[in-house]
Length: 290
Length: 303
Image (tube, rainbow over the protein chains, first blue to last red):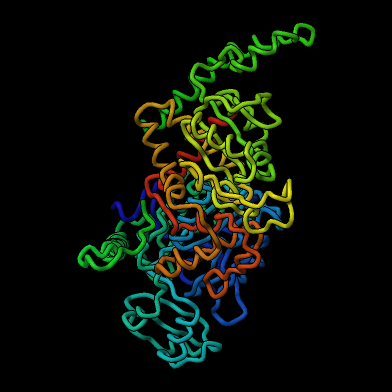
């Protein structure tokens, strides 16, 4: 289980709020947790992937109200540099308790920033809730655009939802599923930096969540830190989140672990390959991990 | 967890000792200050209220004093550090000592003006007298504003050669950025304490923490926003998280389509962006323990 990181508990969960579920990617966990945390003062603002200048191009934004938060519902399969606002959140916005959602690499950046706050003055003790999302890889916007418009032959302006699951990339319009392509086709559009990533389920988040492992409409939730545990339990108590045991859930943790193992072993191999040990004539590429 | 318990034991053990003897100090009345002052300066230990503090000095080369202000911006945290873990044996304005004494850790702020005899002597003295030399801030690490944005700020007209200290002496640890953050300086001080005074396990933690900062020192004396291009993006490592944009003190880095865009005319070459990047260095051993290390720092910093 080491690829799933340390956690205090794991649940099958979804939002207790119909409004959130209506536009949620899966179980609406991130939106619900932040909405609850905003309402109760656990955080006073959250850095989320809001709407950008082009359809499905995420732009990091700071939500200080539930209404603002709702604008960011749903997954956008492109890079949202949420960390870019982490210092700004404590300055222009004056936040003391920041919530941030991010992919595993972004949560790693949060933790590195807390222990090595080289350019993040006064930020380390202001991170109140870091929510991680499962992530296999991410796409630059131009890559995502190509996948949708060329491979799926769908105008990106007409898309109502995108989803990755069961080995397929699916594009929905208001008529329902419009087009599906095998994930294999999308691989070449992946962000190169994703191929050295050694984390699938955001092992360093307070709470991490994703669709893998639980039935449609639900999310798998790992509760990891003391702060995450306290916030999650209170959100469940208050009815913002419905949580059930993972026991007997299909496909369950087995699938999560399978995918985590696949991703991490593949990327470890790639890191070894980058060392160019098999070609004495090639200089090694840089390895960021020490 | 055993390691952290022991850590706490050691650090809190010291607290008990410090409380006992601290009150013995206020004997220095202005009246009998005449000759009495000298020994206090040469042995500035307050009769050693804590048995094994480390000695730290701040050496001021050509810099703007922003790094020193940053150290002081730990506020009561600085007092805690001075109470329990470190004696400040040399420091402009904060310690009345003229010549660079022997010390465990020298925090060197600023670059060295090679046209100034005194600066050259002092940087040599620093290396000879300090066990660990820390380049504190962008100027000491990379030249920063003294090197690239010198808008006629010389003390004397012939002062024109400013070198990062690593071009003149061997440097052990870098703390980049302009200004370096109070929290980063605090963390390095606490880890230096563990490295020098801790048991084997504590030394291991401190070594793991300090290694990347030692690697930065070994990597050289040049930094630029371009490092994000040459060392991260060009190496196929950028994950588009935006840490660099947040770290930049002059807003020279913005994120465009998920990747950093550097306004090179704005860049002051402080090294913050690259050092903050999770793909410049990342230690699972250290960052994986973020929760316990963060809690530990919070606890040991309690007054």
